[in-house]
Length: 212
Length: 240
Image (cartoon, rainbow over all chains, first blue to last red; front, side, top):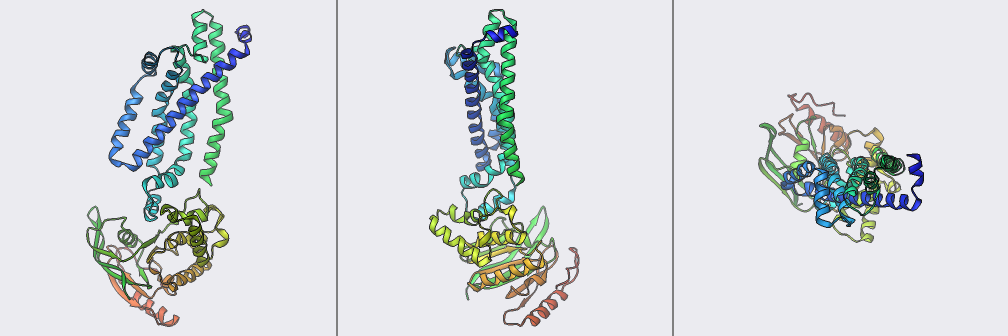
């Protein structure tokens, strides 16, 4: 495995890691934005709350495999889009649950203050609800980004657009088990680096902000 | 003087348990009115009904002009500075920045918190935070300010400074309804005081303080308190 790992040229390593990172971050960003949208709907339209819950349950019940197959068929194996969308679809229920829960837990009295100050729904969301939800959202994002990395690798395995997942499948096809292991270890290193260098710091900052 | 607040026959109950029972009271333009009653008697419920946050079961609330509300807890946004907290209502109304700035500094000066405007709520004392919450309501130029237990949790010095600030606000023509469970807090502030019974709150008595000397005010409030009968909510605390 060490020999295989050493045989991977720097260009292949860097481009594969970058593709996986891009797929994960883009998919995660889409999931985060959609979750914030769902959280806003939950906050501003109480009548739509059952729909938000139903959508979340529905998304949770769809397998990553199903998303990967359907989206690869829809966009084609060479398209860079399926890994991003599969990642987004898989991360969405995790982040959405936390975002909605965070909104639900916001102090009702803060909402009274917003009403008395004449805040519109978007103003109250941006000035009170969203900032109050930041620590929960940061914690959810930490696990969401980790999930995004794992899911994007699965989605890459179904296409031919590159990435760590694609390289793992290629090594598998060529019957090079040490290749599969080497790329799996590269993925682990990538996840650790992302968590230690980025997400842990984000959560620490959000937590310190909450305690202040 | 015109009446800015008229509450008549207000009733409110929660789950069949009556909290407010036929409350009648009035506040005139530029007048500071106190409402005193034991803890848990329903004073906060009354404030919430008057401010429109709760729908009464029956009765009427008529407010002439605009309303500012200061809640029992300061409820400042911890992620905003005192300045940003105070100007929030003006921002929501789309008031231009220069005008907002002027209004914030004026309110801060009235309440003596100008030097704290750049700080976050966690960095200031309870008394300053309370004044910031009052300033946040005051910048909107309300005709009537509702204050729910503004003195609670403050030490003697902060209470005295807040009394002075409230007198200044009243002096500028803003009417106030100040709710408290400590009758002593209202001695230097109120022109009239209503006393309510333990839950369900009902106006039991009412005394006029305007024009009285400090000693006469104390005596009048003591008489108001002594006229009370201990009820389910417990005996009211010592007046002074």
